[in-house]
Length: 260
Image (cartoon, rainbow, N blue to C red):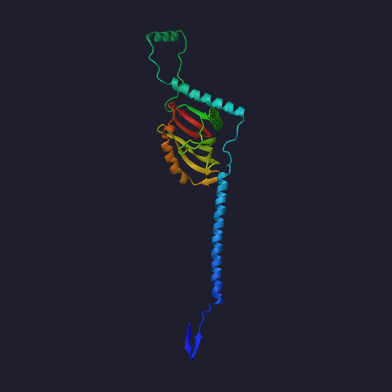
């Protein structure tokens, strides 16, 4: 920019203040450092979350030897057989013929005691208690049978509704059940741990979660409960209790099956 004064052309130049230049540079540096810190913090948080997800959590149940598995699985099966036998014996019997009634009367009159019923009263139904060791042994044998039969999930199986379970453990603590499952997510083995209250309603098993973990990372139950309940509703037929079972709950560190 120039002006003519006294026959001469004068040129004026705008000179920025050094202080203003330094202030702009410092502002840019501060913004760059802040963005850099946020990026590093985000990266560290993501890596930490990934490590926690892939980390194996503390087992909910102690491992068993093959001998313990065999003994506990046999105990589990014996209790299931007892429930089935009790259910069959409680069913209404066929009407007796006149000859059988007369024979029974003659035996009673001869001094033999008439048989007494051991069926529980309606107000006090019979209960069968199962320990976590018995259930884990049965699960271990069931998973082994699936693997040996070759009936497990193949790579082309649609796992949208049922992920492949490679291992599972169960334990009971007071009135809580803790389940731990090894599955595959994005090609990585990941442990899922879930705890909650097991119950029954109208002939179907119910579950209310109190804790959910992926690997060693805690997930808020409020984020999980809604999708979990919808999935349980979709699988409602699988939650139907056997005809011989009236209810199910966890009490004093054991699974209690209430018989009809």
